[in-house]
Length: 220
Image (cartoon, rainbow, N blue to C red; front, side, top):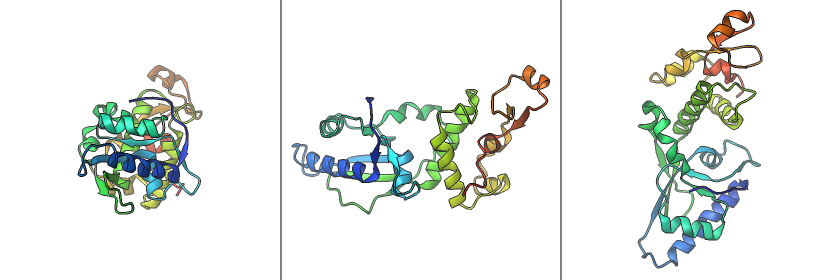
């Protein structure tokens, strides 16, 4: 379910959820009708206060399929696709070590009647963003060309929050995710991806992993 989206503050997104909750209650779907929203991505980090007071997000990404009635009601409130389940198309591409272990915490902050809001744990958001960077790197994008600069910023913040400062510290906390340390990419000082032949000709090129490629440590 895709459409153009505008940037919104956390409070604006919460207000949209409250409006959706009210509309669901008056839509004749039944007093006990409840939709489950498993939120991931930027909204989850905003929920935990990890992006600061002036953070913006285009939408609330959810990993479960959005009920058609709920989607139409959400669009009638705001047509910017602010409640978005498109990430479901990406889930098959995420490595099983991450995809099969998504964890969510029940929201206890807001008293919705027809919405069961579950927020991805910081551990889950961290894993999903690492996976996104790995797929970006495999596609041949460097730090300066990638469209995932927000992911880089979020990962730096999360590593700082978890007090993980080295690859050894990462492997101690996430022993099943050795691929992020062991998979190497050929990079030059300008972060342009090289072929193996170009690597042989470029004295400035080196092999780096995800943490080096995106300079993730020591930014917390």
